Each structure stands twice: as structure tokens, then as C-alpha cells.
Image (cartoon, rainbow, N blue to C red; front, top):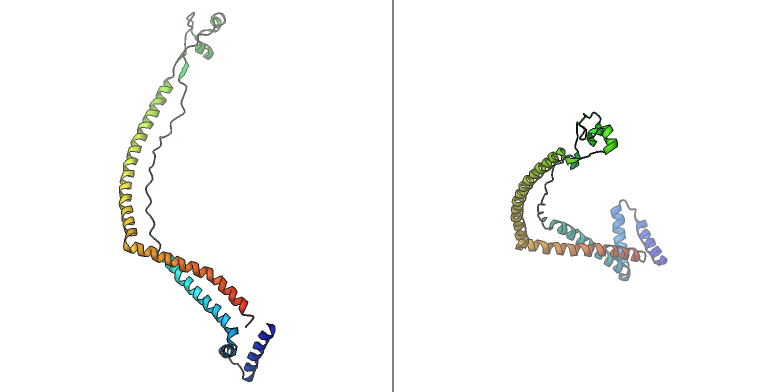
Length: 224
């Protein structure tokens, strides 16, 4: 193998040495003349892999633009339904509170202590009769329920408005989707998909064959 490669280079340098090479073109011409003078069994594998490499490259360069250029238009997106949210309200207060008494329920004397007002008895009566707590509805809770009811009513109105907008958007989307489906099912759309399939196959063949052809050239070139 090394003798063949050395002999070929020696013949090339011998031919080149007969007359001076003034440009790379002359060197190329001398190399081509050497290739033509070589036996066919040495030149044919390299030329065969080279031609296959050029063919795979042509398939890749032809199929890739076709595959990207013949993509279908994007399918229209359906509008999403939006749920209205209720506005924030203060935290829920207690449902009941202690009734405040300003006079002792036992002896009737005025009460000045906050704890006695909640117990509704004075400090003397509480020692003999104990507290007289009484739970009553909390008016703040009633007001809170009114705020919640108003916020819920506003949410219902907002949801009704959003539902109307969503219905209008769905009608428009259905029209656009029908146009998209009709275009895709048309002869032009079918031809576009068939061309995309062909471009994909050509691109796949080119990508698969290029490394193989390069390996073949690399393996057979030293024998030349």
C-alpha cells in the first residue's frame, strides 16, 4: 500500500519536475493527468465514493428547503374560557358576640368595668351569683354577608359578560378553523403535504448517506 502511494507521488513529482509549476491550476492539471494514467482499479473506488457523496449532498440540499418550505399553516387555537373571580372581602367575623350590659342584671347598678359589662353583673354580684353571659348575633357578620353577596353578584355579572365574549370568539374561531381545514383538504394542500414527504425522504437519505460516503473516501484514498 505504501509502495503504491509512494510510487504515485514519485511519478507526480517526476512529471512536475520536468517543467516548473507556476500556479495551482498547473498542479491540478498534473494531478488529473496522473489520475488518468493510473489503473482503473485504483481510481474507480475513489471516483465512485466521490460521485455518491456529491449525489447525497445534492439530495440533502434539495430536500431540506423543500421540507421547510412546504409546512402546513398552523392550526388556529381555540379560545379558552375565562372564569371570573370574586373580588376580595374582609375576613369573616364571628357569628355571635357577647351582649354588653351597662347595668347589673341582678342589682341594677351601673357597670364601669369592661369585664363586668361582658359578664352583665357587677364585681360583687358575680362573686355570689356568677357571670350572666349572653350571646347575640354579630351585626358585623351581617354586614360582611352583605359584602359577600354584593361581590358574588358582581362576579356573576362579570362571568355572564365573559361567557358572551367567549361565545363570540368561538364563533369566529370555528369560521377560521373551517377555512384552515378546507385549505388543508384542497388539492393544493394535499400536494404540499406530498412534497413535504418527498423532501423529508430526500433529506433523510442525504443525511444518512453523507457520513458513509465520507468514510468510504477516507478509506479508499490511501490506496490511491
